[in-house]
Image 1 (cartoon, one colour):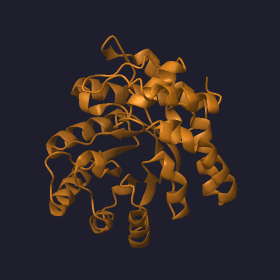
Image 2 (cartoon, one colour; image 1 turned 135 degrees about the horizontal axis):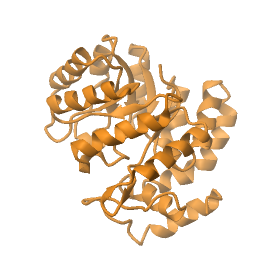
Image 3 (cartoon, one colour; image 1 turned 180 degrees about the horizontal axis):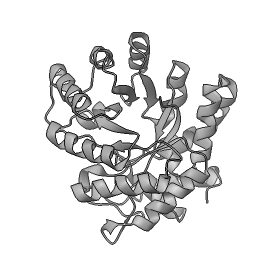
Length: 288
């Protein structure tokens, strides 16, 4: 159902408030650059510090601005099943193509609890779900066995794989037919070599055309050419994660004139120690 480059959009802020005008411009830039889809209010979109009203507004604005030209996978996950249900229902009513459902964080559910959480959402909201497996943020991970079990539900169609463990991709691909999307820019090509369909990308906020090109080459089976793109972009991929996402990305976007760079506490400005690396990575890619 999903393949190619999907941009995990930042949430633009100005003077502490959602900057809707900048958000619409960012969506237009993505569409003009040939991205395959948009993912608002995920990790990169600073969803933990948005109010419910802001969260729902970002989803609505992106869907409106995308105007049906590309799929919109709305981040609607939570560590509370009832809260995730409410946000997912809103996304469905607003016209989202699908929802991105992160593994519940902090409360550390068991595999059976995780299964019950995702199945409840899949059963109660008629919207395709993309599982988001990111133990570095959530403290627990979906096991490959639980993912394969969840894949039996027709509303569960894909997984954003961000465990950093390549064997996980192989286990999922061998056990079910979910679309596997990389959750790490630096692992997109390796995951696609194992049958992954693309990426939900951080870096495509600034270079959507190049990320889309790499994914399309891999989908066409031209891994030699895709590898050239991957190796060229690899230093930029790593630079965007020198500190917690989206701190480096928003810093880069500020330097490029694409965003104010403003974030909400507890996220803060990039350490001066890392600023030269961000600046150099942008220069090397001729982005400054």
